[in-house]
Length: 304
Image 1: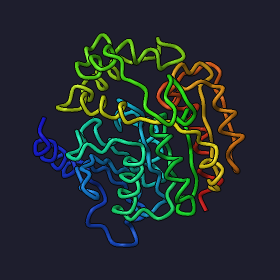
Image 2: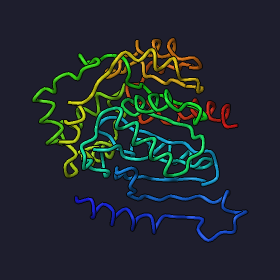
Image 3: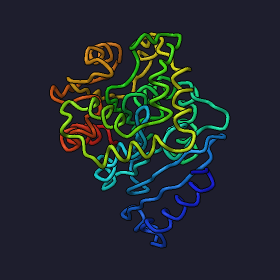
Image 4: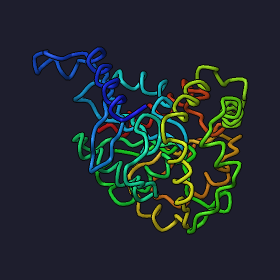
């Protein structure tokens, strides 16, 4: 699907699902909205979904590698009852599609997040990220923590895994082929490995991930990202973060080891940690009600 086609589709969707328009100012804070659109932020073309109450505290949701904003569907629909919820497809992912300038380093992605927050005029949002999205979230917080109400990190990247350090690791041919071709059976197998209990994986979720990975140019963008991906020791940057932080981790995570949870908690000034012994790498997808209860308690505590 071309960028122009994506823009047309998402603009049509925003016209059909926007609510609360035309209300008096006194009622806008109580109205809810849902819009999907493609926006340009500092040269990045990002697919963005906004839900909820425009004048309520904002929550920005950042998904993980090879996923899309649909990873947050359960959380977003619930949080939209009393927050302004912003989710987006990272550069090179989903309907954002490939970046024209091939900017896929971690720093580039933090820059894209910062540009999005600035462009949307989000004042002191909560920032929530999973896996790669968690890495992007805490790196943003390390340079702009005063601009955040709080930080929720769900199995974030940070410490070295799979041989990645301050230099990228090679991308195996099998991985490159998988990302570029995205065969549905392989996507299903990959998704099941992200859950503590593979039987919890819904077929609709597999179909969505497969559809987003199969977008034009997405597979090549994912490979390019891996070729630029680095994990230098994060302790110094983590120590700079003074925003209140909630760490959520699955005890059966096979992607980012649960042992990293304690390292994050020890390195950060204001972090609390919750481990779900039966869940995997995407606990917000696998057990949304349970994880939302903890997230909401954190949001209530730091709302003001």
